[in-house]
Image (tube, rainbow, N blue to C red; front, side, top):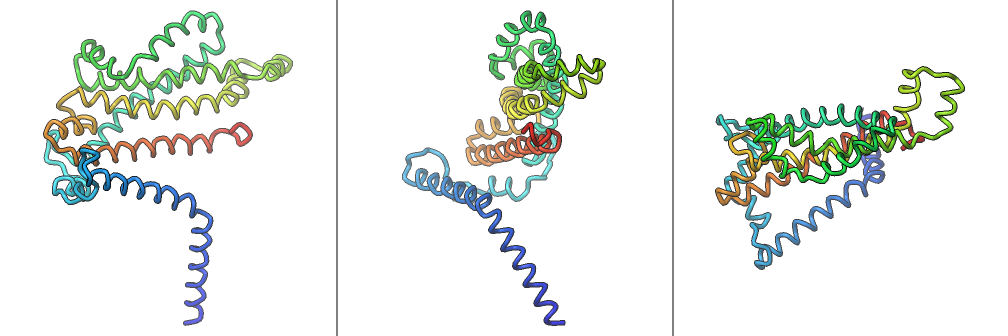
Length: 280
């Protein structure tokens, strides 16, 4: 019995060692980079080179410590923990981004397959895509008169362009041999769309989707900072800043960065599941 337990523990130890040896660099280097950043930040804050609270000071403050320890509190109104603030922003991003993905992919395919429409609309697309997210906020508020639809519009109009333009490029880059084969085999439009066009354009579509998810997350933060009185991580940052709670702002920034990283990795993971290996 003792020998069996010993062998089992030995196997577990060997498995853990193999896992660590295989993934050491993937874990150790990012951790070392983060620790180095925190140490430099602590030193610069301590000597007064950076006028921000140090990591030690942030963790020692009761308000910021409570934000980390109790992210799920809800006292009603906008007085909620960071989990609920982030979730509210994420829900807005999910809605606006999903709409941008559907419209962007559809328009991108139309533009990519129709040269006349491409020439007609390309100047308009290039003009609109250069407008910063913050510039859309007053326009959205003036047109829609409500914070929530205005925020969704800002997300949509900011994130649609990489999806649309990358999809159009992917459609235009379909090899001529594929087009010739479809003509020889007399494929129907439906079969050509699902068997040739979409698979060939998928890498470009996912490139646009990954770029756009970052822009969507960026846009909602910018929109919520201006749109006062709504639950969201952007408004939380602005409210904390106006109340001189810089430590809370820094904690919220870490939430924003973490969620942005997770969203990017999620789109990348979906891409590995859908896009064929030879196209990656």
